[in-house]
Image: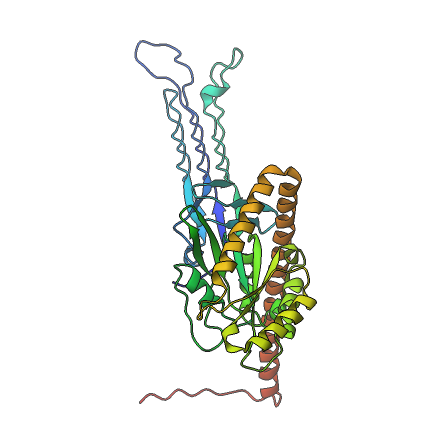
Length: 402
């Protein structure tokens, strides 16, 4: 299945039913009076979070949703039936933004959670509603109102506790495959991960957390290079970022320089995202002699003195138990702190709001850049066309049938 984490849809509430003009007509009953009923309200459009979904790809093929219209009223004071609501299923973790106002309409974080995104139109009134002591036979009715029409952008952010960060081929997919039941693609070339994946890391029978793997970042990712920045939004809801650094890069690069480059890209994407706790894990340590590893660990500890630092090898099963156990302990402590400390809980909510704003701003910049590149390409094509016809001669096209 293709992974799509952003889509734009159009939603429209149903139109309210019209009121009816009617007068009572029965044998032996004089002056029956008005009995036109009211219309029914239009249906609403409601988004519903569904944990079985993990992509927004369906919205690429069906981008428009409209609720049912309300039915018109009828004689004998019969009210029309209300329009049926349209329920649209979206993945858990979907943020909904109004394209026109740039307002975050809502955030669906748990299975079954609902969000009303388009109200149905109000009902029209039948002539019976206008009857009064001075107007015994009103001929006035009102039509039903149109429902709300909105253009919404859906952005999917995977819900995970730990997010993996690093260069392509740093060992992220191998790690998540070793410590969880996830089965990501693993190969000996960069960019094997083309879409985010989730894995549940079970530490004990009653203790587990979710780990997210995203495509590797490269220098320039924040400006659109490579695949990683496209999926960085999936790290915005994680409690901790685990930065994997290859101790023996195939290109011969310096591990510390590589680590600094990745964190620079992360800061350019979202300065607020760097406020999340970041842990460092030196990966593939089985490729180094112990003396080389000890020196590298000392260098990293000096460069990043406040970061938890681990030496691991997913294939060699080195250091994984300690890493997973410490991550579980940290997440448990964070959960308890957020539940018991109101100030900490408010800080986490405010931080996530700032990260969400950064994600939105980056998305807008990338859309503007793509639009500008498309316009520039179109202008270049037009210039080429004009250059070909500078001599002013008409181009004759001859079709030959065999």
